[in-house]
Image (cartoon, rainbow, N blue to C red; front, side, top):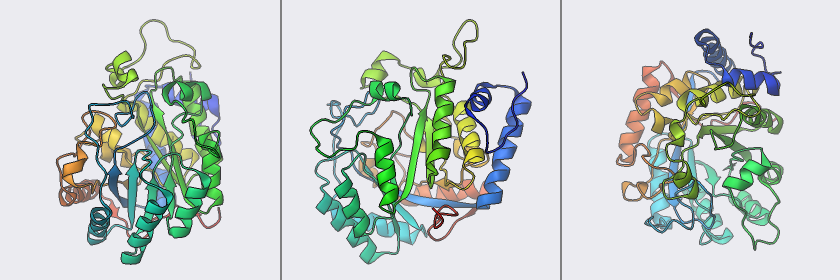
Length: 370
């Protein structure tokens, strides 16, 4: 069966066919096309975003995440404000334009606490501040935007509402909470944030047809940032206990199923396909080579992602004493490295593939138009 031409006008069935193919010649064409689109619209700069994992407390009970409130084996922490700001200064020293403040949904991070932190970082540095703090109320998001936050990352994980509900139970008792993440993403855009989202690849029960709809949703949302990575369940979670080893799953045994039924493998190859197809459909969005992907391929997962459509790296600046405890999934890479070690490693990887480190804000082209 011949595959449809690779254009930004690809539709659901076309995308599903490309996701399911394992033809080497077709995949070589996919990688080349995605890399050409990346170079045409974004150039050869790789932008670095300094990541600080400021807390591993979370009130949610997501079925796959090691930070879930029900995980009693995790040593919890919250970084003090002074330490967060000191780490942000490290990002300045390394020449990064952006710092990403990431945490679980931690109720100790009140709107006032976060606003004060943003204002202090802005007062002491020229950094772009990106927040990744989960689902928050509109008035909190508005206050943080007014305090100086520039970007917000909130992955919708899957656009299939039934699949989402199975892995991501709701959070009751929050009056004013948006009914879904798509509503919240719209709110973020209206508040003037640069908006980032993304999806997981290989969620149990996820079909190629469903994953194709996720990629179409990226195009529909016209996102500034898109992050995708393989589903890796933590062993101390319901999904980790129900389907151990799912991350390495391949094609199902037996006869090929319809693409609306066939389980997507949570593997490296499929992740590259999603990155490449997303680049073709969303040529101007910033896309990171994610840590989850690097966890599957420590040797050159990041380089392969950068060669297949990605243009962002997120070196981890979290102080070493905290890193091992931000355990969303097991065997995460780089937990014993210092910020300096991680920075040097990332620069070596970028140089090795003939790219250069970006400078400045590194916003998605055309952001002002949107």
